[in-house]
Image (tube, rainbow, N blue to C red; front, side):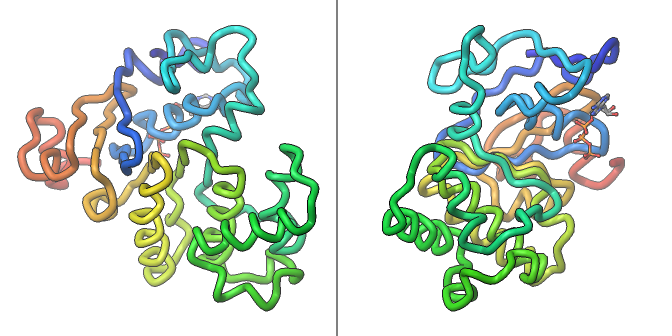
Length: 242
Ligand SMILES: Nc1ncnc2c1ncn2[C@@H]1O[C@H](COP(=O)(O)OP(=O)(O)OP(=O)(O)O)[C@@H](O)[C@H]1O
């Protein structure tokens, strides 16, 4: 697929198969199109004036850009976590229950179950179980990001997109999120954009290296980091640029 922002072509002939129930990392220097591509995968670029996608993005074999596709359903199936934790200015419970409510779950008991399951899934239940009614914004940055992950998984998406989810966090909070991401792949297909190559090496199964709007190389992470096939990948991972 290709992506334009008005006349600027930000993605050129991107072709990649993302494996299910694995963590795929997108790496590459600033401005190479990693976040743009991530946003194409749940049509977040629909909100960007002048953005235009050509080609196909297949989810279970169906093109998410086909006419008549329901974008709300798509975003339930393909959830997203952003760079900066962005909880709603409401309680912890409300943040997690928001998505399921939007999709029609109304029973209090059922919602309580979903909230607990999601918070456990995001490895934050023990820290918040006694204060579910307190404002989400009273949590630390790392806790807020795990809450955002809980909010994203509450609607049971198939795919979880993460755009540099630890870039605003300290090393301890980052380590917790990394551990969490490694576990999330048991239930979800995870795609993570990261600037941090060590992070990609630690948590991903597959890595795609982006450069100037193209994917230079993609493959098992171990392979990309130890025996890249393309000289540009090697230059990047050995720190010669970027
Ligand atoms: N909304 C937009 N309108 C116009 N151009 C954009 C827009 N968003 C991104 N771009 C351009 O598209 C290119 C790719 O940007 P993108 O943010 O996807 O790269 P990135 O690899 O994620 O970078 P970073 O690692 O710095 O976040 C850049 O040249 C950027 O300036």
